[in-house]
Image (cartoon, rainbow, N blue to C red):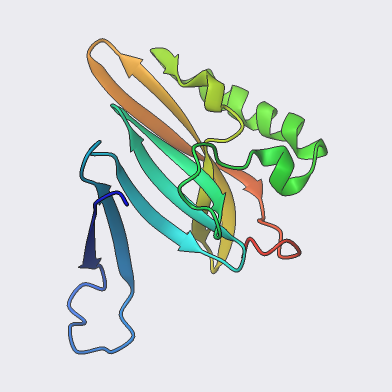
Length: 152
């Protein structure tokens, strides 16, 4: 079995005595030093942020197999018709990037969840490099995660 170090950090800011504190779990693989943050856990899926080398990628993975290499893509999660809608939103983001896009192979899988206005939304991520700096832009797709297949 691989050796994992789990770090739990309180993000409730000053609510030390509250029993139901929100917590963020970071899992660090000791051998490869890949860092994984669990952003959300639903009935069937988990939303993760994973450091892959010098690139931070988002992944939505099944709860029963969270350490798989690839996450589900936008069409697996929402249906084929959303793939072109996702591409349209992503193209608007790409116009503002002043650098080289990284990990184009993960274009439809670099997705996660964000909480906004009391609900969950699917977000996308574009990783890019400018000169010697690697960075990313997260964007709201405007898509609500499906309840029917256990995402939320």
